[in-house]
Length: 120
Image 1 (cartoon, rainbow, N blue to C red):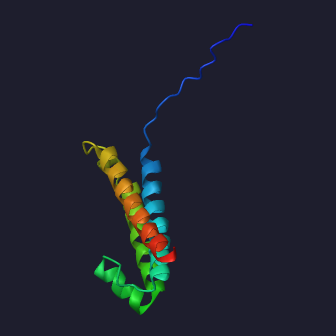
Image 2 (cartoon, helix red, strand yellow):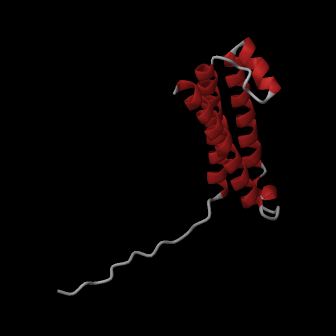
Image 3 (cartoon, rainbow, N blue to C red):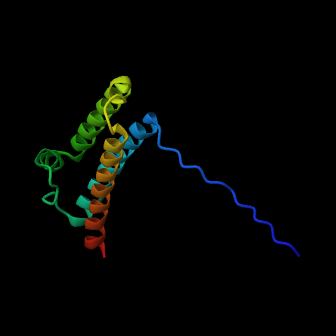
């Protein structure tokens, strides 16, 4: 019995500009909003929110926070898509986008950790 080596080559492809913009919108628009609301609900207080503007919006009406973050993310996404030719001329633009996504992921995980600590 002979064994053949059937390796499938794996190619690494850097994320495209549009993919990075969409990931920013998803992480900061959806992930941050949902994780903030979950952490606030689990802790029973809005005092743990680091951003004073968002904290004030949460205290007044959580829907204002959702609307504000949605508007900001929509504007940022549209501006980034419109300014693509300019942004792609900036050295290491992809690194900046990946860094913004990584930072957003840390924020989301931090909010989830706060929720888990208060729930369990």
